[in-house]
Length: 325
Picture 1: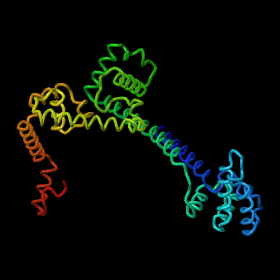
Picture 2: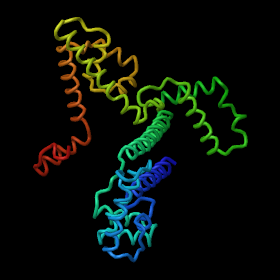
Picture 3: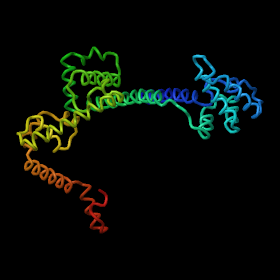
Picture 4: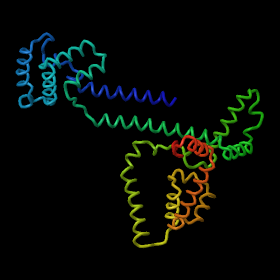
């Protein structure tokens, strides 16, 4: 469904951009021959003569009509199209085959520079990309919820809630096959996980403020906010040598363990409390923790089957032990 929506949006974007570019080609929606007042069989000499006559008549210095500038610009566009043999042949081909868009674009762009109003194209592109971005985030959220339903402790909590509310009573599954019962139970548990359990981290449902257009709009503010946060930190803890507050302790702990804000939000309160006890905001404790973690990773690697296999192959074939890391 998401792929279909994206394809439809891209198709709409292409149509809109094509329409905008088409209006900037040659004489746009108007007929160049009709603007010049000549037949398609007119010679180059006849076109030049007709242009000189109309230029005097339609020039804004002589033409007092409200749209004098537009009339003159249209005349110039028609003349530039018909006076050149290549562009005239391309234009005639367009008149005879109006539905071959891509070929007309290539023919036109390969011999001229299009005068396209970039602003509408950028705005429409941003809107479409924002919609695609939101749909992608919503799809990722649905996948995350589907995954969460299968996490044992989350599924257990959801099942307890469902049973306490009587949602899993047999009467609701009467007449269903085993497969239908399984799917119905999964749907019930999924609804509970989504609406009633406090699932944090990557499970937050996307809001309208998450769309690309809003994020770009807020980018200067967010950059300023980040800059102020770090300037404030530098002033308080480097220059003034103040004691770390809870926000700073939380920030430094998260940085030491190497987690993003979203990942940190997903960490249980018990795990956070155990990390806070280590006081990782102090350099000595930080170094000790990193060294301890490095040692644990080394032991885990040394006892892994993959590592043992690599050692055996290294002895047998005399190749570096980390050849396949």
